[in-house]
Image (cartoon, rainbow, N blue to C red; front, side, top):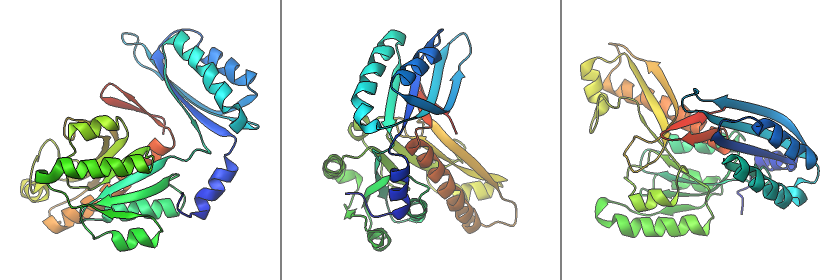
Length: 299
């Protein structure tokens, strides 16, 4: 059940005949022409198109198309079938998203709910086009605000000693709610390889951009002691290499000698919120393609 949100309900009404296609494949002649012809044959009109090709030594082609067609729901199966044949012809990796099928998102949080609040407010305003199906937290801090939006809140205490047990409960919930995207909104627990492998390129995390300079505990204090002039944040997809997954978005904010450690933390949280929200927004709008350990961003 989609949590009540008039903005998103209006979006679904307005886009019931729209879809997005993401493609990556070896660069070769005829890709765009073949796809355009296919869409034309199904009565579709391309309303947006972006493409990118890597340097000739690698030669990988990337494409994002938004298209519309009357009575699209009844054409979905036929269009998918046609794309399967084209994908085989050009050795494509591809995803086809119909906008009436809203992606379902789960948010993981801990004690600091600054990023959680930002995501909820962006969702309420209609800027995050998703069904926030549930929030899972190892602290009760966010329960009141989450439930005020009519979103289920699950408190599951977690630590390294019970990690397998905790993740079993979490994975069961994610399967029950049929989740498409997981957002770690300053969730202060490390996920196991088993968990990460269950959702490849479907888990987005946020961390400070002191890395790799100030790895480990108390990065703001050590950055302050070093006299840094810029602090920032990075949103990225989660892989089994801690904080080394494909980068989605980054931003920085300037600091100086007048800023205390407390100021650095406050400014850091501000930039983390915006960077995480943008990364999530781009994923939901099918603007991201993961290629090796990088992302192609059609922003």
